[in-house]
Image (tube, rainbow, N blue to C red; front, side):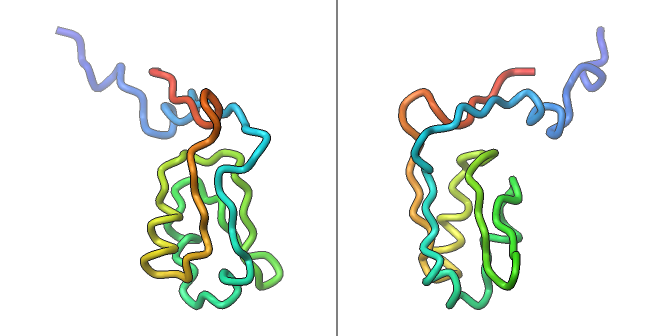
Length: 100
């Protein structure tokens, strides 16, 4: 019997097979005025793709590389100021996971 553990890819290796087909319109829009008033900024530590950063004392965001998990929207509305507006990209665009 073959050792299944040897043939399985790690999470990082699986994410390396992910394809991003960018939509011309961002699927996440951040209201930076609301964001500026947020004390905890839960989006920064919670985004698994690390797309939210602080630069020059402001939160910046880039939707390229988004895993479309919705974590930012959930944590922003639960512990932030509701600054994140999230929707799925247009049909066929966005992240596409490939079996690796």
